[in-house]
Amino acid sequence: MKAVFADNVPRSLVLRHFWFSRTLKGMEVHFAPELQAKIDQLVLETGRAPDKLVEDAMAAYVSELVETREMLNSRYDDLKSGRVQLISRDEVIAHFREKSAAARRTPSGS
Image (cartoon, rainbow, N blue to C red; front, top):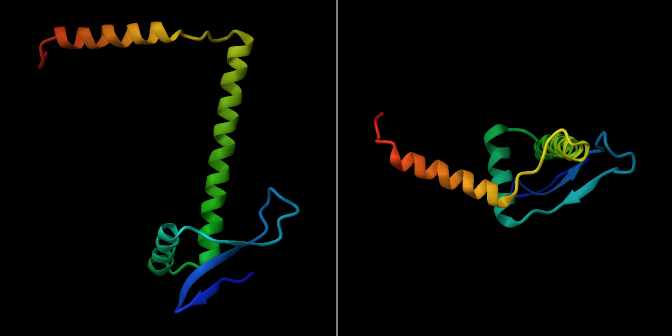
């Protein structure tokens, strides 16, 4: 694994093999200049290797993505099984209009 440096600033990063893929061996990653500048700054501030910084960020992102996917699947299963019911758009709008009207009727500070 190697990171390419010019003037001691990482310009591209090589990611190590991740646990979720048996075929991913290494990858050179190029970022938009704005994001690269943020990564460069973090590397300087933390003293961490650029590849480790990006690997940790990707691991956190993938973990969050898996959790989100599981939550969405669970909610879909709840809908499909009938454990929960959809609320129509009109019901949601009416609910919030009533809530807003009630808040306007209530004197502040009470």
